[in-house]
Image (cartoon, rainbow, N blue to C red; front, side, top):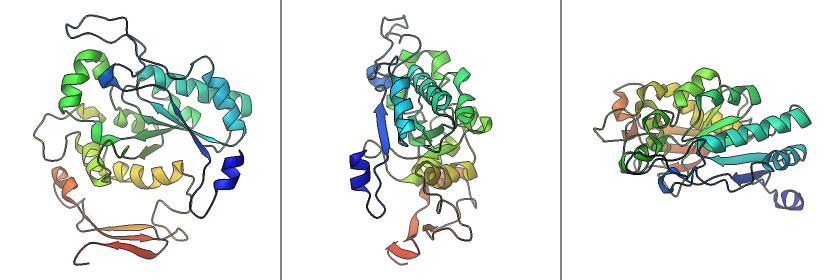
Length: 275
C-alpha cells in the first residue's frame, strides 16, 4: 500500500498485483483439472503445478480487492482458470461489487463450465491471440499431451465473446511479438500470418471489430483508462493511423497492415518514413 501511494507519477500507477497461478502447457506445468497424457497417449500422474495454494488464494484475493487492488492472474490451464474465478467469486461475496476489474491472462485451456462465469463475475478475459494457431509448440508440445477433447478447449475467444465476457488483448512480449496487428490477424483467422496451416478451432475465431475492440477499448478498460480506448467526443486523442483499411481486403492480409502514425493525448509521437 505504501508503494502504491509513493510510486504514482504521471501516467504510471502501481495498483495491480500479478498472481502467477501456474506455468505453461509445453513443460507440463500449466495447472489442469485432469492429468496430462504421455507420448503414448496414456494418462500420467501429472496435473501441473499450482504456484499459489488454491486453498489460500480466495483469502488473498479478497483482501487485495478490499484494499482496492486489481488482481492480474496468470491462468493458463483450466484448473488455474477455475481457481482464479473461484477467488474472484469469494471476493465478490465478501466485499460486494467493486471496480477493481480483475483479469485472467492467457486462458489457454478453459473448461466449458467456466465460460459464462467471466461475465457473471465481472472478470475480464485477457487474451494473447498470437498463440491460438497451429505451429510447432502447439502441434508437437501441447496437443499430444492434452488429448483431443481438452485440446479443443484452447483459447476459446469466440465462446467468451458470445457469452458476453469483456475481452482485452495483449502480447505477453517479450516472449512473443509485440505487434498487435499480428495478434489481431490470428484472432480473426486462427492461422499464423503467412502460414498455410489448417485453421485452429475455427469456431473460436472472432470478427475484426471484436479483435480491434479487445486491443483498444478492452485494454483501456482493464487498465482503468476510461478516457481513452475508443474514438468519441471527450476522449483523449490516443490514436493510431494505419497505412490501409484492414476491413477493405482479404482477412488473410490483416497482418500486412502497418502503423503510419501514432498520437498520444493529441501529440504525434511516431511517424513511419514517408508520413
